[in-house]
Length: 102
Image (cartoon, rainbow, N blue to C red):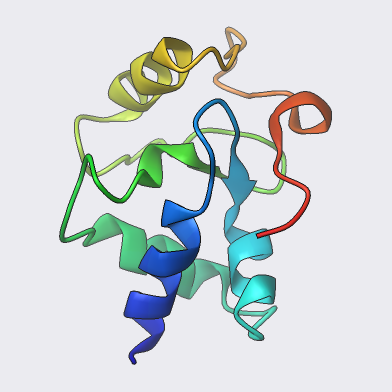
């Protein structure tokens, strides 16, 4: 199984109404320094809507400025639809919304 496939499997486990960071996903795959590779994999998500890449944010809770499926406002809209509060600066409260484990 490729690294990308493992990323997609991890992202599918993020429940609705929660987020994970690129670093959390990388660490859960045994590659804690591969957060950029996680982001790259998500940019090429083969099944948007099934693999919920909108639930992945950076280590500060910031949404992706270059969200591949409609931009940052589309990511914000998807998170809001799941009950995740997104602040005006396009961040989410990781204490409140981050998954604890993948």
